[in-house]
Image (tube, rainbow, N blue to C red; front, top):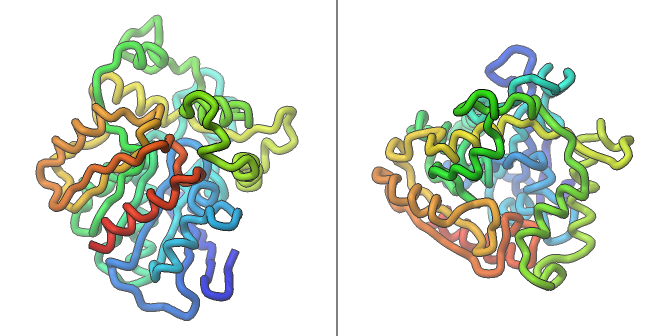
Length: 329
């Protein structure tokens, strides 16, 4: 929602593939229309909720987009196809059983490219900053490594890259075809509120759940996710569709196959995550940092007492400040 000082606009733009439209939310200081590349930022979600849920949660103090717009940014958040109000391609509508995983990372990178094209044309800027979280920390550099002239800086929040992990790969491997993703897992699956809690709670040690996050925010995350994925609201229990493409990407990463060549990134990069992130792997992140041999001005930051979901937790202010310090330096 817009406020007295922040303008909000929802754009529906063409992807590079026929019939695909992408939802891009924009927030900016009200009345301001001219922005420099340094003030222009695109946010990209991970494999779970769509962009507005992650970056524009309608809870006071929890909209990252409001925070950035209040600092003078023209900030955009794109939902790639198959998420939120963007087009659900046929593979996300048809019966998922026995079908290839829907929405692989290279497809998401094409949608990021379409969003960057839109923003550059709209604001007449040659470069943009881009932040990708979780799965977005692989789709964003996949785009950026192939389009360096269009990117000013990137932030990889809860970053992945690649590293051999036989046990992790085995979770997604076809037992009848070693080395291949198990397509019996289907094109997509239903995610419930219990699934969200199970994954999030699993990152928080001991009895610290409500010292690290607020109860009403946990509920707001799920309700907002349903709002942007209403198809499953009537199910019992309520659920949202989640494409399996990111798991196929994970399968490749766990076999040591990265989505892109880190040495091809030339822009400055910030790698940032919480020390209790149960998904991003610190060793993998350090390996990525070391392989970004041509990134000018790279940084590595770990925030204490934070999980894979810091933007919804009490340490989010530190996350915000570290990202702002990097973008504004």
